[in-house]
Every structure is written in structure tokens, then in C-alpha cells.
Length: 122
Image (cartoon, rainbow, N blue to C red; front, side, top):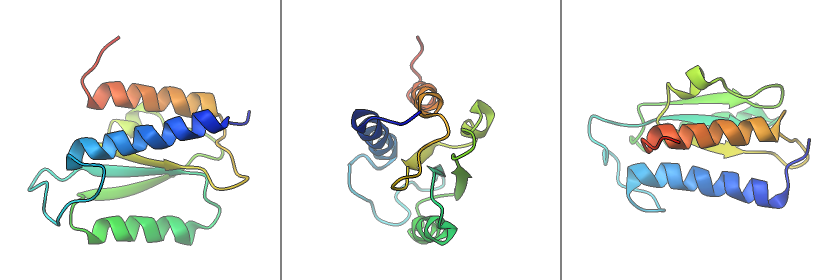
């Protein structure tokens, strides 16, 4: 199943919104901004070059603003709700020509995650 352009844009906007919840702005923030309550971030990706994933994780950790940065390769499955529950924010991307295993599942998981971090219920 291939994701439409609108679905990809929605995933990007959701990611920015979740990260912005912690920074208060769409940009960045100074090291130590979160104090002792630094968010845990999960990188959900379809990246074939894992050195790029490691580079993103390393750069995020080097800011001093995150407690941990994990990664999940979403080419063969999506992260389970229990995996997502271990994180406060997500950074989600699909590499060119490498789609998510199930874009609908990823979208549903992100929507559930959004509800969780914003304390919204249906």
C-alpha cells in the first residue's frame, strides 16, 4: 500500500506538532530546556542507510535536550502501542522509494500516540 502525498505531509505535520509540544515553538531550544524531564524520542523510519539514522540520533542526543533517542525500522512492521508508550515524541520519515510496511497502520498508531501525549480521548 503506498502513501499519498497528503498522508506523508500529515505524518510530517504530526511529528512537528508532537516535538513542538515539548519545545513550545516549531524551531529548536537551548540545551537543558526541559530540565530533568527530558523527552524520550523514537525515530520511526524506512531508512536503508542506518548510518543516517545513527547520525540523526547522535545529533539529537548532542543537544542535551533528550533523555534517550531510539529507532524503529518500519519497513516490515509498525511499532507496537507498548513500544510507543515508552516515548514522549516521535520523529517519523520514509526514505525515497521505501514506503512504510503499512501506511494505514502507521497513521493509526500515530493518531493513537497523539491522543496519548495530548491526553485526548475519543
